[in-house]
Image: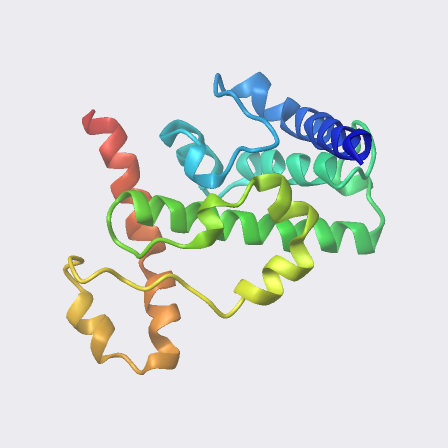
Length: 179
């Protein structure tokens, strides 16, 4: 049994190493099979959470490698179904990264997703997503628009929080420029 556990741990370590290889070239952060969204540096989150092809490709590459879809495989070279899966997982990760930014700004409540290893978020995407897809972290009472949030119909509160994402990205960027 110990040998099986060691083999599984080594497989996870190698999968994470392969998956994070592209990020390791770009960022000085130490990344491994236990790395969670909450562990990512502010610099990484700023880069990865931006809208644009550069950040999308970084996330796509991570997902492709963690899913084992081929060494050096490119998003556009994947078969249609694999591309759709990579897109779904990538968009989920991007959402969670943006929520992590909002958490760091002190805007939203903590979420268990922030402490799950990124490797698990990708490998167990169907089960993680199905349990989290309807759950958007709530706005904290200390946020200036909390009163509006409270007045919103409960079913619209997740939309309310998501509409704050552009403001959060801007505030997080300004935080970097002011430091």
